[in-house]
Image (tube, rainbow, N blue to C red; front, side):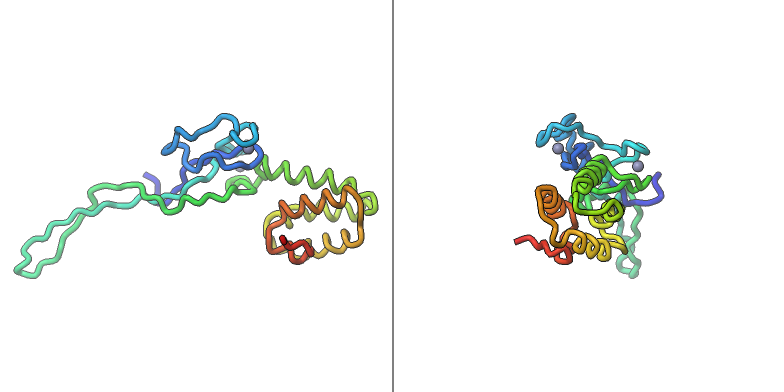
Length: 191
Ligand SMILES: [Zn+2]
Ligand SMILES: [Zn+2]
């Protein structure tokens, strides 16, 4: 038996990051082969290491059975574990950005990183060195890390005063992918 009594059910997520099923075994009827939102292939394991995508969080809880004996003599209830049952702790599943087992980005994260790289490459007013700095910091602005706030300041500084289609396109990307607390630093609070 598993040493830990907490465990995750397997989730299904499409290549573009849409959560399709938070518990593939209990709700097998909801399983999809292709995403019903965007048509992309659905996966339930990390393409790099094969470990499951974490879904609903459960606990294997012991069931106690007890008998009260010799109540008059003040004896206590004696109980023993008669079995176990799975109890759901949390069904809220946030689609993770990186694999918990191998640390590689999931396909939807890779797509996000690549899109940003392509757009940054089109920011003609930046030097190659500035572009490289922005690319290097992408992982720090889509997920909170110790470098995130510094990364956001670099982004704000480099983008300040820039204009054009690629810049607008990049700002849209930022609004969608940067984690919310950074939008303030980027001067891009959602209205
Ligand atoms: Zn999808
Ligand atoms: Zn992995």
